[in-house]
Image (cartoon, rainbow, N blue to C red; front, side):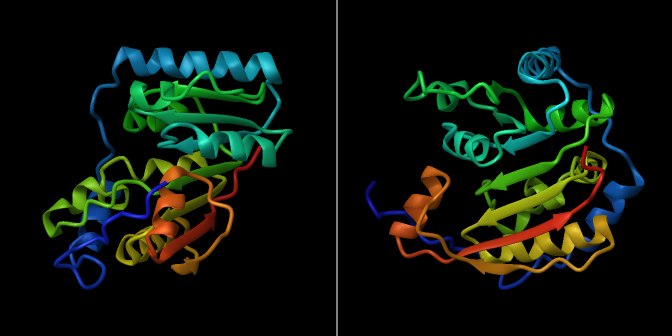
Length: 224
């Protein structure tokens, strides 16, 4: 893989000043956008695969799984869990397939905004919840497109489990850490992250391009 990933450029030099007010607004007014049928079908397919493996297996969500590298890695690391890798792009999910997807994992095409809410609607909680290298939307005006500024964000608390988010943009992780701290009522740190064993193609490319990597984690509990 070529080491040619551009460094993130943004007029922001720190966490967005509007994030606190935006998050409070989202906490006060639940997200009511109608859920599309194909996302309900996607959840049903994921739960059917979970039941075929072991309906008692704790669930892990790999949100924005892309081509599925991370989903396969997580499934190998947690063989007694069932891992759902979700991405909105069928092209990414199908790229390079068929992969040897293990029996304790499934790759599903769905819109995360709906998928998260459907999990909560069904009372489903997670053991772990990965958000690895989401689009950081670095323009100042894009705050509401970042997960920590999106109206769906408060549902993460309902899903429980250990949340881990990684990015190559420090400010994104600082914002995420602050927002997760509000949801969890716990201190959450933004910390540098380094690895010689990347979990995703983006992580591999960013490392090869000399980017700094950042991570934050919190445990919401409610783990099965």
